[in-house]
Length: 173
Image 1: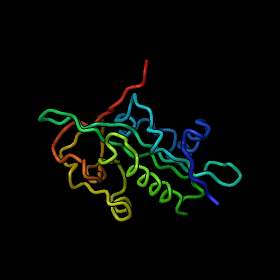
Image 2: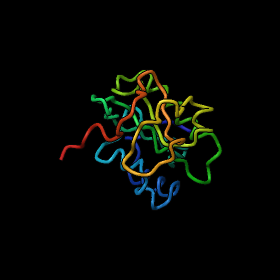
Image 3: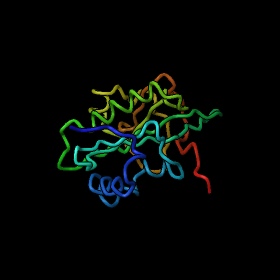
Image 4: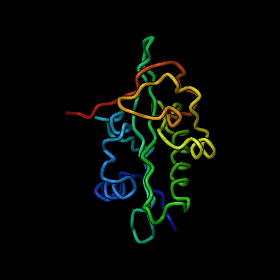
């Protein structure tokens, strides 16, 4: 049996170890890390998949970001990911369970930007199962390289215009 728990209830070092195993030691150089630099994950939308023995099988984190629109204004959004699963448990539905739980929470949580979710990921997977598309993201810029077809979003609050995507909330110094 797998339990889905708030990520904040899990040892942070176990999460870091999982992320290293799932994405490799160079993961922090990825553009997604630059987008959310200086933020803390959103507890209401971040979850862990834990086995009966207490071992961490997977995690999903969500981050407060915003699109700074070229024409002025800022649109709050939520960046989804990373979605990580222990390599020996991948393809077993854990990532899908985590995504479904996060989407359910996003619908109910009064979190700014929860109606405008975005991620960098496989459009064949995230589009097919979770309705993420690149339909409105064509004019968005990120602080690093990315494949435009992998910049995906979903929700009624997703802006369609051009702008720079970056962190929305900063950690206290």
